[in-house]
Image 1 (cartoon, one colour):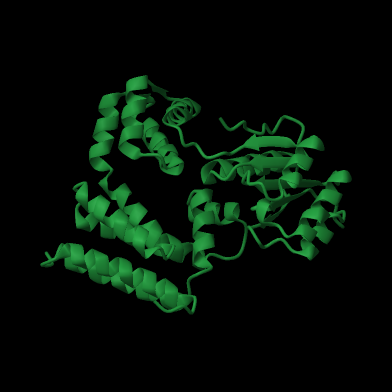
Image 2 (cartoon, rainbow, N blue to C red):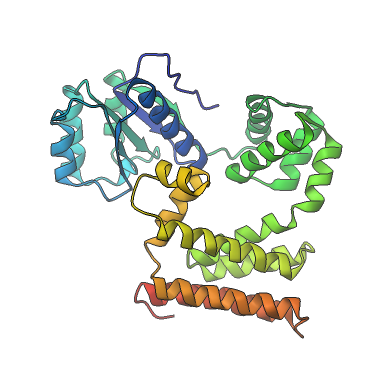
Length: 331
């Protein structure tokens, strides 16, 4: 399980987040940020996505702040760093600054593992964030998540919940939160079954995520599986529309860190981060085209279209094409 970084503990100057499970990585970064804000409410956050770290960032990292404030520098995708940037960070680790918290996110790949090992050797705090793939580990995650939220759950309800939701850790965490809230804290099999009956719309988000990411094959496969499980077409359109609206809201938000945007929009930070990454491949015109297609599909399925399945497949293709046009590619 993910260890939290207590705001009352000594603030680490070096942190390694080891793994690429999106939810656990986001939580690890958030814990570090929360702890830093307990020390300095005006902490500066520099968050670099994979491939975005520059030579200037490394120079700034090694320079003390003119105003004496605390800084957090997050380097995501450290396994993808070019050799010169990796070596510059290795040199920094030999003499880290007291007013900087360096967070290195490394997937665990072989490339640049030397950097991850160097953070450990330098005494950095290690936050595990490896993907959870074994059923037993997913069960343990759900049980621990319910307890973390102040609820109680038995082994039968844990199994029913994992069977109903699947292996996506983000969705499992979201469902745990919802169930604890709705049930008053006691999550039993009856509560899980009741939730499962009403979760049809959630499966449509798998279709939305794949389409927005431009993966036509995966989106169509997810669509067929979703419809095959008995989900009404109108709920799939609703989920797709919600995904596009989230993308539009994040795209239109003023600049700032994912945490600042999440607070402003009332969205989970991991969802904001995902939408920010997706938005890089979309233009305003492409997004508007996709929204129009979703509106047309919504009207068609609600109006009893002759072939709603064809309408949904066309919607998915339209969204992927809109994204492709936004990036200048042709499909």
